[in-house]
Length: 114
Image (cartoon, rainbow, N blue to C red):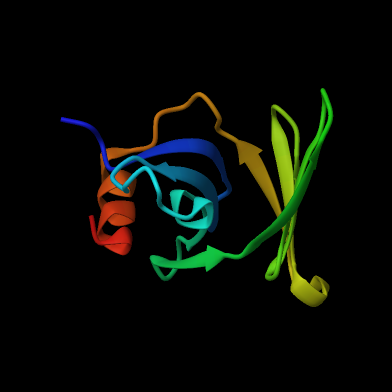
């Protein structure tokens, strides 16, 4: 059975988790913004919120993602998420290559309704 989504990027700290997922359960003609989604999980409240992707930039060393809600800059080890209007900055650890927990998979599936 094909899984509903694949985690492409996974960054976290003690209180926040940012993930990019690719939906595998959508039709081939689905809008790209539905297929690729960035999510922010507030671990303290267990609440997900979508990040509205606007653009990206990348080099061999650094990746950048621009969202309506803020800005993410990361490399292979660490990242920084800056909320809109610089209301908060979050230092994150890049967990790319680390499998997300079964609990987190379940929570994402519930959030996505799949």
